[in-house]
Image (cartoon, rainbow, N blue to C red; front, side, top):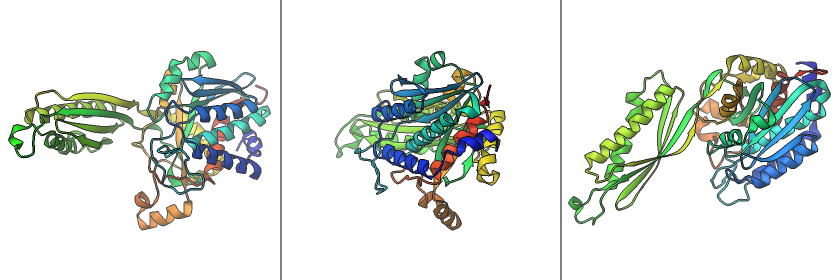
Length: 408
C-alpha cells in the first residue's frame, strides 16, 4: 500500500463508517426513478460542496459533477449512478423504501454513498496527492441513457477529459470481495417492444379470427431457439421474453437481448425480426409487426492495462485473496459511454454485498441463486458493512493508483 493510500484511508474510522451507514439508509429509504433523482441529487450536491468541491448541478438533466483539484496532474473520473427501479420493495428492512412502487433494487444507493465517502476522504487527504478528481453522479443508468445525456450536455468540454474512468457495482457476492474482468466485462443489452396484430372475434367461431395469442405464443417458442441454434456455443448470449400481453386483436412482447460480440448482437436482432415476421405471416396477419427499441446499452470493455494497474492497487489494500475475476457478465452498464466519449481507458469492477456467512452456507448447499437475492430482486438488500467500507476503500485506492504524488 502506498503511503498516500495509507494516510488517506486513516479517515475511514468507526465514526465515519457510522455516518456513511446513516447516509446509505437515508438514500435507500428515498429512492427516485430515472431523471427524477431530484432529492438525491440535491443531497449529493450539498454534501460534496461541504467537502470543498466545485459543484455543478443539473448536468444531463439531474446529474451532479463535483471537481476536486490539487495542482497539476492526471484527471481521474469516479462515477456513481443515482436512480432506482420501478419495483415494490419486499425486504422488510427498517429503512425500506418509503416510495410506493420504487426501490433501490440495484444498489445505486450503495454506489452513491461509497463515492461520497471516498470523495470526502480524498478531499481531507488532498495534501497526499496531486491532479484532479472528477466525481460524476449520473442519472438514469437503468434506462441506459444517463451517461449519454451527460456527455451530450458537454460534460468533457465543461470539466475536462479524464485520464481514466473508474467505477464499481455492488453484486450478490460475499461482502469484502472485489472482482474485475479485463476486456468485454458487461454485456451489450437491447430491449424491444414488439406488437403483433391479429383479427378479433368471438370464441364460438375461432375460424373467423386471426388469434394474436396463438401467434405470439408461437413466436415466443421459436425465439427460444435463437441462442441454442443460431449462436455458437463459445459465444455468450441471452435472449429473454420478459413479458407477453394479449388482447382480442393484438399481442405485445417485451424482449431482452444480451451479448458481448457486436456480430452476435446483430445476428440475434436480425433473427428476432425474421422469426416474428415469419410467425405473423404464418398466422395470416393482415398487418406487419411493429418493433420498438426501448433501451440499448453498449458492451462495457475494461482496458486490460488499466484493470491491472487499478486492481493491483486495490488488492494491495484489501488483500489479493479478496480479488477475483468474475468473467464476462451478462449484466449491462452504460459507464463505458464516458470512456468512449473521452477516449479514455475504463476500469469498472464489482464488489460483494451479501452477508459472507449466509453466502457461504448457500454456496455449500448449492442454493446461492435461490437464497442470495440478486440485483433487480424486490428482496435485494446488501449488508451495510463491510460493503460500504470495501466500496469506499476500493474507490480511494483505485483513484490514488492514477493521481500524481503530492507536490505534483
